[in-house]
Image (cartoon, rainbow over all chains, first blue to last red; front, top):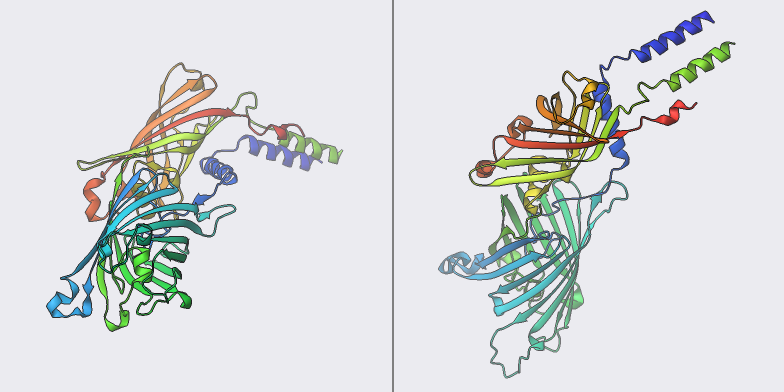
Length: 298
Length: 194
């Protein structure tokens, strides 16, 4: 009995005289455990560096209040010989602007030299991959665009405005698997109001696959392939393949790549790619993106 | 009898809470921490309003924690780079401070107006812990304790690698400002009623 009381008293004393040797850390631990209870979902950042993989879009959008000026450029084919300086004599270019209306919605316009084409698009971040409780496994961005060819035709057909239009809808689905590796699949439909021959379908169905592997904090390897369903293949055209290298510096993203497609919008690279990559019909090109913050977020 | 004594002791143990008469814990979930990097080329500013802190007014101990991801920048790209390349928030999700107010006297709570205080402790971020001594002020307000401090942090000391290309854009020493409006917390009262 006495022993028990002494022990109890000792315990009590020890409790009373508790020297706060580890109290600092315990205070932080207490704070941390409290915060853990209220831990919320956090969206995954930077699945890709830019708004483009190479030719096609990525799930990324600029973010609200940010304007991106995007210069995309493809030289001629590497196998066009020394006379054409291995393609560097020729150039196909797209100048584009895209603006983040909000963190979710982006609107963009562009002008491609190929077929003198104007394009406009809307991009909406529907789902965002996240971490934490009830995490979302993938990011999904919905994309819709239309392209207008302003080329002058002399083929006798009246190229009215509807006949000059092409539409694209895509669901971009991506997952950042690790800090370095991201993958994306892109079910795509391109609808052409006018096709050249009776044999061609107005609708082209395709599935894009793309990946990014970071090499360092600011550089990455990119790969992109758009597979068209067999029913959607036009004679003389091929699936678009591209491989590239991304470099990020401050407010710029530089993308250098090789591709068998000369065009840089969906309509072009999905329906008008004629080059055989493995025969040397390779266009060397680059995308340069410059971000401008029009509406500071702070 | 034995059981009774045991029970009594247990009850005493459970009932024992130092200073339940007055709250000894002040805390906040919505403190503000901002930092400012001034360089000839560019001023960079970011702010988080998710700074959580606890102050024990009995001992003067202080801890705070802020999620790196909660920092908002003017430019979204900067915010992305801050998380992805500089602070690596996926690997090191938060910055913490654990320390105490030097020469702390609980009577300070009765002071009218701002009282200068010095906090000493460990600041951990980007996986690096460093011992700091930070001067600040403590202002007892009605039902609140306002703790303000600002101090300098050198990114290099926390292994934050800044590439040569942007070295001139980021200050060698970044000014951090902390504002903690702490409110009293009733210490777990359920235990005092066995």
